Length: 170
Image (cartoon, rainbow, N blue to C red):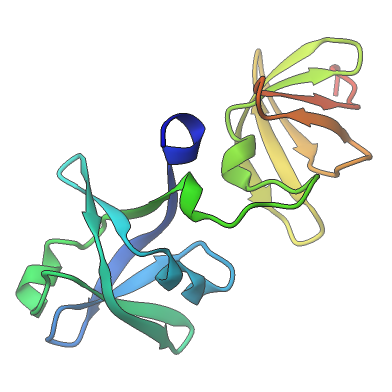
């Protein structure tokens, strides 16, 4: 597979050591947190390079997740994984329903108003509790509510753009 389907999506980070048998604590951005365990193999970034690593075992532990990766049988070996990002290929993620998107699919889209005024590019999203917010950077940074059908009126992933109902002066 090539193109957008094999791009890497960062889904977590190795945040600590757990025990003496090579287990690591994982900070997961998946929902629920333990869903990260279902995406084996992981791609772990070590020394600037992505390396495929099968998840040998894993489980929810308290409010977090712990895992043991193939080839890491003791605490000293696992210490080399600390701080490493965990990614999966986009094709490993379940397909979304019509009108649903992963945040990773929206990041990088060009944002234009209904009148064709280009506002910039989606750099990230912020979870606020009430609704997600698009962080759009162009000539300046804008925070735009990610409300589909109201503010976000169209998304075209193939052509990498999003149309919003938004005042460019705001």
